[in-house]
Image 1 (cartoon, helix red, strand yellow):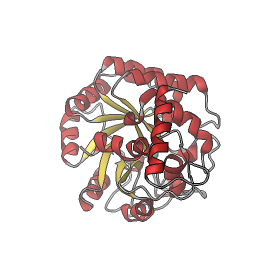
Image 2: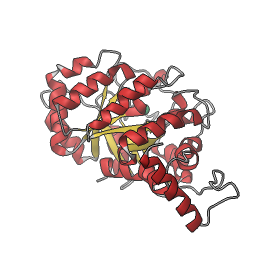
Image 3: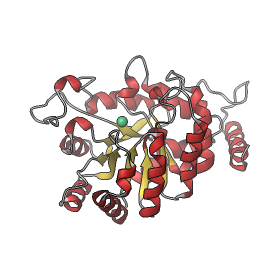
Length: 312
Ligand SMILES: [Zn+2]
């Protein structure tokens, strides 16, 4: 056990006694209250109103599954879990048109932050990013789309995106597979200081098993002080079955490598609430089941990191 883990165990015990939360078993899992103030750092919203918000030409109405996931549908799920702020991730259906996300941010002041998608080859890249920044966008999603992410390391437009993000304190948010991690490492060396937030554990475990070598690589990126990881999309990783306990050792390793101050929890709704998966089961994994975390470390992963990166 690392020194950090020992410390957090002590903290937890102390808190439990002081807070009167100690059960007969010592560390109660069953009845912890909803954590007020939590931030869900990764959700997509969309509307069936494709007249007002047209889809990108690569998508049809049939590709929207579920048919609708509006901010109202989202808030009805997350508020009972104590989640009152959410980072919206631009949905692929809308291509480079971030307007539904921007309109949602305006409609619920103080509730949403945004991660946009831009064309990094556009000559107007900086202008576009500045405009989106005014609308509450704090990060930019990059997606390898099956291409080797190493292309990014030789791409002038991608370099501009990283530099503009760095200058403005915005995050670059790669949606990648574990095999793309060496490319991210190279980008971190090329553009030091740019804030990076890796989605969904770099999808380690998507094949059904957690590959320790891949996890070593992800943990190795912790030596770059601006790299963060989303502990998210539990429905899609490992056994892909609630209560997702098989993901706890991976989360524990990331906590030891990055510390909670560079990890943020997220659901990836609406996908976390399909096929019998529940919103509550996602937050419960960190809040109730990760007993290697102290209450303050849980709060950091459930709120503090996303607050610093996306709401300040
Ligand atoms: Zn997503």
